[in-house]
Figure: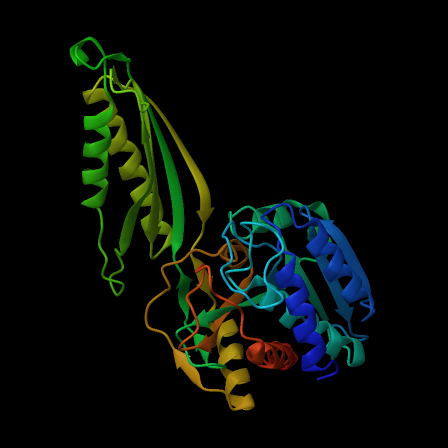
Length: 380
């Protein structure tokens, strides 16, 4: 590598120590920009789709345009680790490994600085706001992105519970389609001793919860795979003389495909509307934090597999999609591309756990994989 693993590790731990939430990655972006400038990209776009950054390395020869994407944001989770680079930002921490993903792509910049692509160009994209599903859309909506529109897009995600440095691939859906619904019900407050004088949303919320639960098809191998999870419920006040007159329920829905998700959204809206009407409740529904299923293109997956085999890495072809969402799915809706998994270790804490930390040992594997994928593009 053109930069030592020790320097990349130090960079990763600096990012880890100063995490920022989705859409607020201002200082993270500054640290990344400062790092990239030392490796002299041919173009450097800042404030892309908010705090996003694109470093572009060009060849003298025409060829494919390859985009490699990573994420800037952290999560609203209090870190319980006690190492010296633990989060300095109370109740915010890098518990999905985006600090490691950024470091891998930063390491790739150091390589491309010393050896430009043989042909075409490479775009290193540091994307904001992945965790809330807003960042990819913001990047794609930025008019400057139109000028650097890629031919192919690639990304990786570290995977706890998989052997370190194992490469995990799958054609078609790699991650699930995910959408979340907020259901607000308005009735009428009354005295708790005379609830018949009001309209209490409790039975409606209970019925909605039960009916949505019946939509679950937890078999990951089924094309109709669907998980509906209650994530938040609120009703009334802690005042025991009052019958509640309003309530709110939030659910997250996960489906294998975008088509199944659309069917489920329509079914959910119809069901909730009917129940609200049954109990004479005013209804407001809102969808939030939407993630399209990440559809891996066979050609792009082939490049990933070839790269892993050339490098001698352990390769696993997964049979079913992961059930978590990833807004990289918005990129693969528009461009040929693939996301692949990078094993983080069998004993490492799970993603989004308060004691998770990205394993620095897998950083060189990520860098090498992307370099080999870029080389694959020269033979198409």
